[in-house]
Length: 343
Image 1 (cartoon, rainbow, N blue to C red):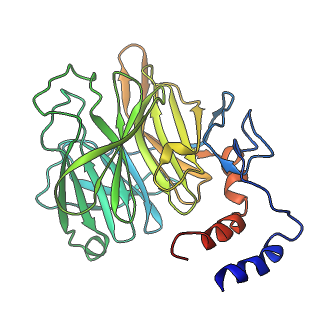
Image 2 (image 1 turned 180 degrees about the horizontal axis):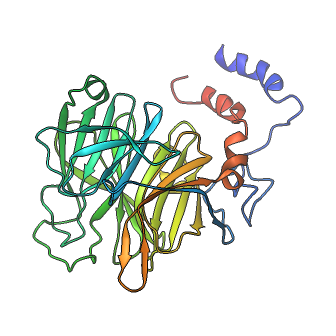
Image 3 (image 1 turned 180 degrees about the vertical axis):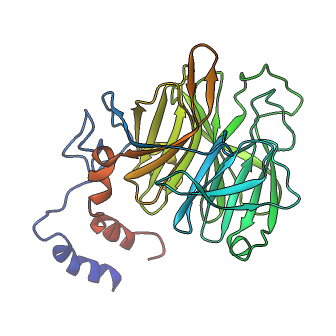
């Protein structure tokens, strides 16, 4: 009966469209190799060089010299320092002033490099590992949002090690491929994007988001030609924005979008330079995928340059507007669902 129903309804599903085989190729009209006949994105899109500028720069107070992570939560953005300060701060996006803060009792900040979230929890990555690459106390702090709002933060610890790295191996400072400053969270897992000092790439690792001790498993590696320092994921939109900089402190945004599942590098990959020279950009967040907040640490090179810690706002409408506004096409997926085993 199911097959008969499918045969009878196929003409209705494809009225005015015609039945055609799926064609792999570049499906992004903004790409230089866009194929109008492609119906399945195979991740082959290529792009010309592109850059963007800050539409607003807001200086941050002295209490935040090393802002190192950002989330958009509870109608505001939150950040933290990357060492010796176990507080998380809410910022005014007009003045840069600190609006609220909460401390994590009994927690020491060894090297907090990232903050992420899901519906019920905040995750803080105490996994900075740039000094020798063999840090053995890598951890992620899982904080209940309800407990924060109640004024009594409750913290669970997720400890981990890398599947490909032994803790006895030593490296010179800033020369390891096992540093990490970027993290996103899904319904059941945590994903880490490493900061590969040697290769200029990033390795993607996954681990459970439950308390205890885990081994972060390597999923893939991609050459981003830079040092990744932050990440934000809009899961329903299949969009991740990474931030980072190169070795002469030229910041960039690296966009991953229209990928399949959690194979983040299977879709479009586009690098956008940010015209903020000598800004050590460390964190990124967004609420809508178009307007982005990034923060940079205080950076001083005596007798050369001083850049104060700041919050910058970027408008990426020209790069992501067409993708985010395009209606999703479900017709072929619905038809294919009829043919899945067991149907």
